[in-house]
Image (cartoon, rainbow, N blue to C red; front, side, top):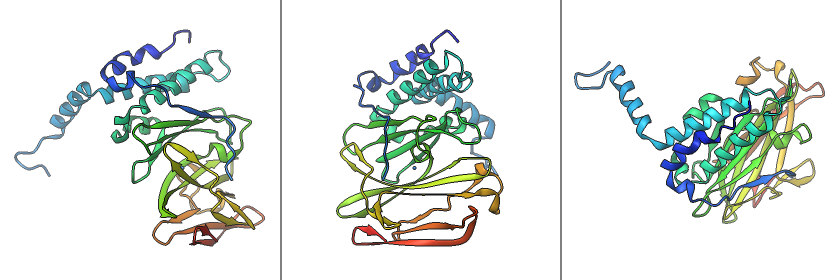
Length: 289
């Protein structure tokens, strides 16, 4: 693939005027060390489809998302051994980061990205959102790229955690839940993630994150775990031992209850089997123990 695909964004960037004026606030993280029945007057389905298509044509966000999806399709359909792989991956990542730097993106749901395999989760206060996607460089062990979008100021910030064969598993876990709670006059965001690490093992993570302005802080060390104060808990288990045998449909075994302020971690035996038991940690002062 010799042709670069960034010109596809020309129309959407023209329509999304705030984007064209944004200065890049992107922070790329390379060495992350963690311690997410019709009534008579109602519209018929066919009429609704026509109206929806008309709305899409007139909606610049739908147009921009469509252009992003074209770049994503080029990225995932390019062989990783090809000389074109890195350029098309870069084009997609940069286009998505640029779009997410627009403050108005906060309220757009990006349903098309989700349907294409770019999973997004957002905190209830809309101050943090994580986009996760499989970069297709792994085999039975999957690697995910995580793009964080944070809104603790007047303008958003984006942070990219790119997967690679050299990174630790906790850096590239597919983030699929975000919870939050208040303590010490701060909001703590609890990220839960899950990734396959072999044809039978699944890796899970819980990560505590705080925001200061648009800066993300990972080393809060407010969990007492295995005798140490940490910000991250992770475990792995044999998903074939569970009632569910489809690794892509597994629910998180690590749980967080924001009301009870309780962390529940599955107990796994020496054969990597979930014992149906949990170890629970409760927030006492500013420490889970």
